[in-house]
Image 1 (tube, rainbow, N blue to C red):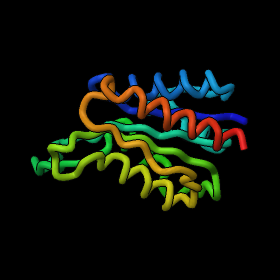
Image 2 (image 1 turned 90 degrees about the vertical axis):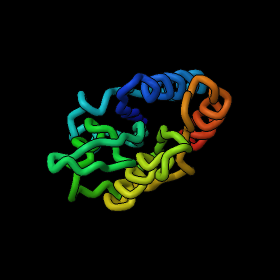
Image 3 (image 1 turned 60 degrees about the horizontal axis):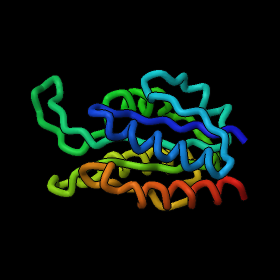
Image 4 (image 1 turned 180 degrees about the horizontal axis):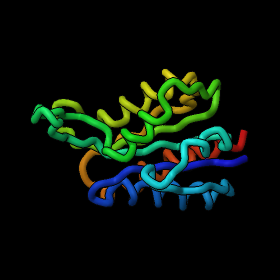
Length: 155
């Protein structure tokens, strides 16, 4: 089985979570490729049996200077845009998102990624992992989610 773990980070926190997930999956005997969303070719989706998507939630100003809270990180947004219109019928997907509960749209990146999976006809086969603030304080939750993911991938 070929597993692809894609992450998009600004401060390094999403990378930290992705590394922790990858380590737990490998401990459970799951081989995977971990790649930054900015470095992946969309064709890898077709070659993968399962895809794990992770992004921080980002607030940005648009070209018209409009403030948009709760967006995907830019590299992940570009990848999602490049894959629009494609169908990944029943391909297994898992999602993790980082955010801050102090914002109105907590972990909105996970919401965007879940919507992407639905639109592409993918199979989101376990509830998304949502990390609040600093992931280093939530290692146990990250590990538990990753071990649950590993068990489902091995079925």
